[in-house]
Amino acid sequence: MPEPAPPATRTRLLARMLRLAAPYWSCERKWQVRGTTLLLFLLTVAQVALTIWGNYWNRALFDALEARSVPGVLVQVGVFGLIFASSIAVTAAHLLVKRRLQLDWRAWLTDRLIGRWMADGRHYRLLFSAGEHDNPDGRIAEDIRIATESAIALAHTLVYSVMILGTFVDILWNISGTVTVPGTSLQVPGYMVPLAVLYAGAGTLVGWLFGRPLVRSTNALQTAEASFRYGLARAREHSEAIALMHGEAMERAGSAVRFRDIVRDWDRQSLAYMGIVSFSTGYGALLPVFPILVAAPQYIMGTMSLGVLMQAAQAFQKVTSALSWPVDNVGEIARCRASADRVLALYLDMQRLDEEARVPAPDRITLGCCTPSRLKVEELTIAEPSGQVLLDHFSCDIRRGERVLITGDPAVTSSLFKVIGGLWHWGHGRVLLPDGGPMLFMPHRPFLPEGTLREALCYPKPPDAYGDGCIRHALECAGMAWLAPRLDARDNWAQVLPLRSQQRLGFARAVMQQPAWIFMEEATDAFDPKGERLILEMLRHELPNSTLLTISFHTGLEPLHDRKIVLNRALPAHGAGVHLLTDQPPSQTLDLQPISQ
Image (cartoon, rainbow, N blue to C red):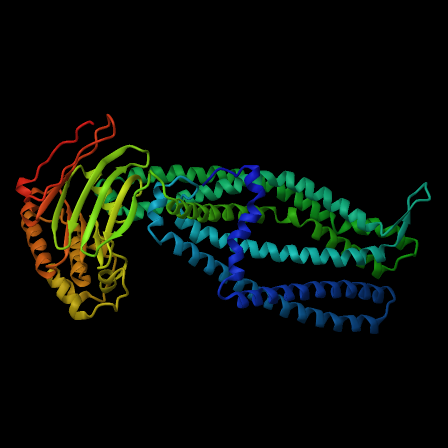
């Protein structure tokens, strides 16, 4: 979680929130969204109208009681029944519309952020980008929910309070009459209105002083909660490695440390809540009594009836409650602001990534298009995010149908794989990818989503993209025919299958997709030498016209490729290295160590 924003940033928070939220009211469903918002507003107006009706009913009831009029009391009982039934209907409708709008806004914003996060490799590039975007999954799943629900709830209560304030100030002004300041001839009309403003103003000021620690502690607690969830999710994802290494004790210790942070921030928030709740309790307990005591002299002198006294007391409470909206909602404002900040930080960091990608820069690798039958690398320099050069001035030209083995330093070969895949931009130079023809990237461990085996094999396409015959043939080619009867079985395939079987499923995907270009990064390292040879021979037989770029450090693969590229880390002296590529067979390929220029 980022540190609290500086004052200059906080002043722009509302503008940033509107920048993120405004497109929702202008989206493709804008008239439906605006109609729902208008309906919510009209129901809020109805709530205010019922409150005003209830205030005048309160006056009529107490006047009837003061007059000891049985018919008058019975009439007010009937009126109360109408108010009661109307309030239930309006409140129920308001709740449904508000929750519909909250869910719809959350769904729209979630779809928008997930769409940006999961496009163009942003979810990967963010890992290496500076900014405030830790735990993006938690920000999307939890913080969007809090921000949208709280924002709409706060907006409703604010609009309600403003309308209540406007109507009940007029009522209170008219019924409170004029008083003369003792010992002077100064007369104060509507004297209960300035008293209400002073009462609410003092309460708001003291409440904000108590509430400031609550904002800080809420921000810190949400950060600690997100870190704790992330740690547990990470342990679940790597459960096999943790179990094999007997790392449970370390994981428990790490979870205990993160939970201690939650306890610490929870205690700080509890102390902050204690201050604000203690003040609110006293403030609220005095509120019903204070206006009656202030207006009692007029009732005693006979210038105000009992009904007017009770109406004035209720109007005073409504005015002060409306003016106290900030202090009453300080906790919810803190939650909304903290979550909105986290969502906005993620959104703006992704936007910054896009802006940086659009601006040509000398320290950025450029991806372009070549002819459908060529892949060209021109003067490519690959660097780490820190600026340390891994590979310097590397060029090559790979033709369609070639089998090329890439070996050398694992850090260099892995970064080249990511550069071609569009995930790594640190460095400079150009990579011209073949224009046309499907491409398939096969990492060390293929991604197998939870679900049916059919869904895992067809990924990233829908499960009906390939027929049963195509899938069964691919499984047979990959040596996984025994799984064919389980095509529609659901399981966590990344957990139940060993790495070799998972890699075989990756080759089954290649047979199904029939790509023109295949890029493999240690995609056969779980095989024995014979198995490697057989699976690559199968690939040559099934995809005779496909280009194969294999990153591997197994020397036994050389005879299965047309040529070999050896990539070694650039020397740190001047950040330069020379890497030569020849068109000779692998056995005659020159392996020149980098030399200083």
